[in-house]
Amino acid sequence: MKIEHYISQLLYRYQCVTVPGFGAFLTEYQSAQLDESSNAFYPPKKLVSFNPFIKNNDGLLANHVALSEKIAYEVAVSAIQNEVSQWKNSIQETGNFTLKNVGKFSLNNEKNLVFTPIDQLNYLKESFGLCNFISPSVKREENKEVAEVIEEETTPITITSDKRKNYSFLKYAAIVTLSLGLTSALGYKLYDNYLTQIEQETLLVQSNVQKKVTQKIQEATFFIQSPLPTVTLTVSSEKSPYHVVAGAYRLESNAENSYKSLIKLGFKAKRLPVNKYGLHPVLYGSYSSYSEARDAMKAIKKLDNKDAWLLIEEL
Image 1 (cartoon, one colour):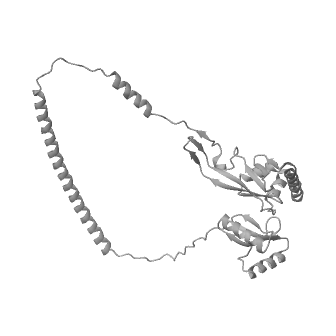
Image 2 (spheres, helix red, strand yellow):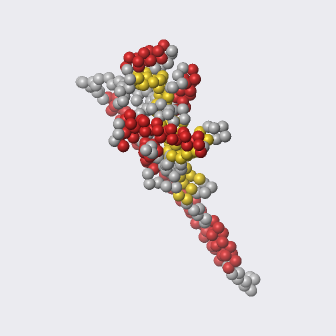
Image 3 (cartoon, rainbow, N blue to C red):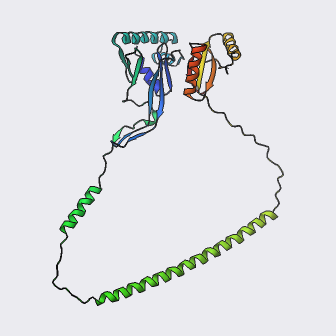
């Protein structure tokens, strides 16, 4: 069974897909990008990353495999474990392996696992049908400059032999132009004064109307025979979709003991309702950002519980 196909399906719908015993694939939204140097446009997408520290089985992948293959949940869990064992053997033998439509794994010089996501597949459903494209730049200034040069070069120059002409008509043209200018200036002045007068009269009318409206409002009396009851608005608190999980227990008594123990240690512990697998989850706490939850999980794994893991879900 190749479970990378089911991992790829879940990445379209969920922000975190955990492979038990191996790690978790996380997605993060990236807005549309424009590369001005190459005039290339890239649509919005989901960036896929890998966290090797989230290994606990949250049931998401196993349940999806069980429903798709029409097998029991326990059989799906066993199949995932076998697949993970093959991945680890491939890493030890060849130093790398690839999950189709997900990404490539390799070992660096320090023997740490490095994940490189694929770029050919966009897991953001809202960007379906959008693809990268390059728009060629439009050059207009160069054509304009060439046209101006050609015009300057081809314009004929006329040389006349008459050195003196009767330019008396220019004198009359100047007088006519000056008269038109004075007339325009005087007309503009009169028009401006006319507009100013209209604005003042409009303002006076609006002021009188406003005074009458205010007087009517002051003289009016309002009677409310059946006043409406007081409405209380409740402002919802900030969502905290990131949770550090202490464990999920088959017996409710064990979950209650774990919850009380965490409260005594000073944690803002929570108990979640029983999930569809019949387990009772217990949380160290909930956080509004991924970075805050990740830092808290690291501290808890170091000081209290190395098996603590991160759950991303709006409760």
